[in-house]
Image (cartoon, rainbow, N blue to C red):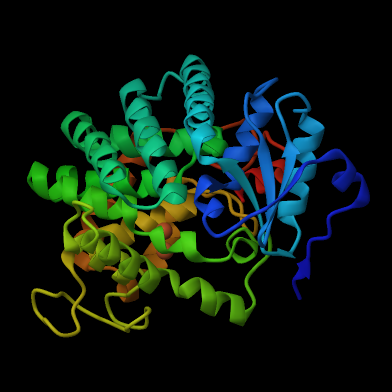
Length: 388
Ligand SMILES: [Fe+2]
Ligand SMILES: [Fe+2]
């Protein structure tokens, strides 16, 4: 059962409290836990971070009092099962935070490249650009500007991607070496783009649109309450039912954004709504099956069938609160078991060949420990925290 967060007396004394009116609410923006965790890498900030509890804002960290201890307290509270608790920043301060996060990401990538000659710098840079856009979408919603930023990053990615093995090998090694660099939507966009353009030899424009569908596929998750989305344990059946609504919510949100002028192709909404459907049925929300080209009423769009392969592979590579990270071979092994039910065999078979080839070229032994591809040089609790 979720508890309401109680503001302690000490916090009340130390921090400024603001009651939000409906109009003020637009002046604050909710942050992802991963974004806040990056601030462990800096010594000072020029903006405040707020706890938001329903309509009350507490200025928990201000520039004068910034410390990693206060960050610990923010993150610890977020990891508990409190109702209606989130971390916010003033909208006007967000660009400064985004700049800090970009710098930290670039720094981390530079240091990875120094250590690992198998990483391709160009691929990592393209991934960083996709991540910056993905972070904007996650907390900023979909408007004309975000769509254009997404298109610029995706155009550059499709135009300059090297071979599928270089792209997927680099992405996988990067995620295994530093899980904090993982961004789900950026990674799905990149893998979906690789499948479309490099493996299925689709033309550039179609491949870009498919990558864009990958970028927006989980937009509905922004409407799932934080205590469920960031839950460190497995979901209860009720919570899982709520999580499942993100597909339809995403479709509705994108459709609404298009109606309000966002320059997106309606197929992006369709893919978001369909990305948890399974090729032979049994998926959600509508238990669709087969190919749209062959069955207009119940079939799944081709772009969705590509994005869903990218989605599952990307999720398996990542550490989750309830599971270790898997290497590409391990991820492929898990997908092969479900392949007949879940994926379009034509798409899955080219993907399978690509991962096997990638595994031949790239070694996924991160450390000299026993398990290939596992992150074994990090404290697992820390990894779990970072993954939420
Ligand atoms: Fe999803
Ligand atoms: Fe996803």
